[in-house]
Length: 73
Image 1 (cartoon, rainbow, N blue to C red):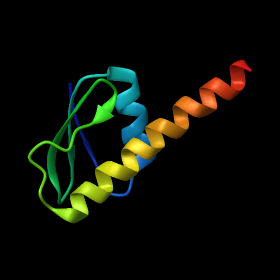
Image 2 (cartoon, rainbow, N blue to C red; image 1 turned 120 degrees about the vertical axis):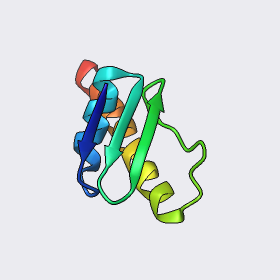
Image 3 (cartoon, rainbow, N blue to C red; image 1 turned 180 degrees about the horizontal axis):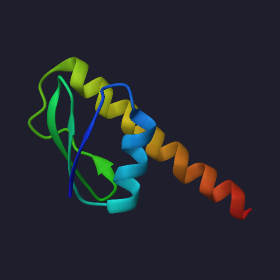
Image 4 (tube, rainbow, N blue to C red; image 1 turned 90 degrees about the vertical axis):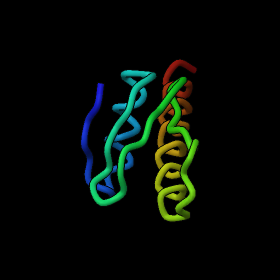
């Protein structure tokens, strides 16, 4: 599955990654990226700006997981 996103849509990308678990996505003006095990991967990413974007996406995924745990408590 491959989907295209605008750069500042970390929450939408996080939801996409959580729902498909493994695949790839494209961020406009940044390029293609892949994800595995429900996390955006940093493999072969050398650009600091892109790493920050992927880090923000992974933080959103982590928040989504912690919110889910809170609702079950």
